[in-house]
Length: 491
Image 1 (tube, rainbow, N blue to C red):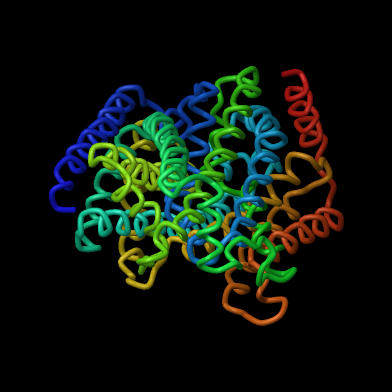
Image 2 (cartoon, rainbow, N blue to C red):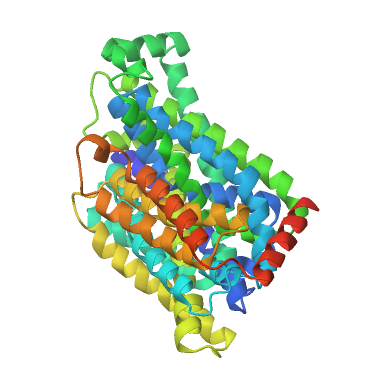
């Protein structure tokens, strides 16, 4: 591989310089906190859709999911099926309503901001609790991306893990620090295209190398017939757990913030088509990459299943093409970390600093606090990522569950149930987050169920219970609900 390193490194450098250039351009267009955390609500359909997909999937799509398929076979595709269903529902039913309601609810620019305005919460409890939970779970999520970066640099260049962590982190922090939401969305748009092409090209070329679909699947079955069994070795709880990943979509702030930032409701149908198509095709490519890897590397099984995509790039392609494909992996990592850093920094700037410390802070001051937040969260995530036992799949699984159970039911009920109240929102959010934190440490029987599913159910029940036993929504809350509903229908 030594003779191939130089062209790959050059490709990487060109790519990274391009991402930094976008950050500098966005820096010149960022003057207010709204610009920094929501891009001033001026994203077009294509940028909104691809940046949502790219920030959603992260290194999990190119490293974690193919690795799971390579290690366990087709049964792991239940995760992809659940996520595809969740993504479609998110785009079809949540995106438009959230875009309309956040504008009606005081032109909210963050999820905690929306919750506070939606329920008329003068106590600030919704804003504070939601911001705290965002920071907790996003720190784990950001760490997963940094671990993915370490896997990439170790597999491709033989770099020490700590060196790899710092190289990736410095680049990501730099353009997120400078350009905020616009830089993140523009870079994610480019990264989304790269990820899509990589996941289409790699499995197709590998299948052709093995002689076509028939011989490929025959070879997979020869390794272990169970590799092609969708229901093999998994019970009802296992299937529900894997499908349950789709529930997480409704509560991921770094994804649904793209819905809030779409330029206008008229852009929504186009964004829906692009977003859904991207998810379906990319997931299919990731599933095939893992399965085909079973056959391709049958004679020399991989020590680390999560390196299957990376190994394909090295053995199938010219070094320059391999460099582009490996840049797609880095793109997947960067596109999620930058979004998570931005949401975390907005929680610190808008929800803590402005909400609790300096209500009259200037826009310039708030942008600087947001930038400092990027550095703080990234630093903590870097420390966590240096744990040698950390894997992309484990970290993503926990963070995805935490965010999905904490905010998923809250988002859905707040958009579709007029009778929901602040007490219901607070009870649902706290119970969902705590359930995930506790459940993940239990095992056996029902406790083998993915913590996202249990947290989602308990959060939903608490929202309904506490909303019904407490005071009814105020007339202003009900009027805002109807106004948002009318705006969505009229789009």
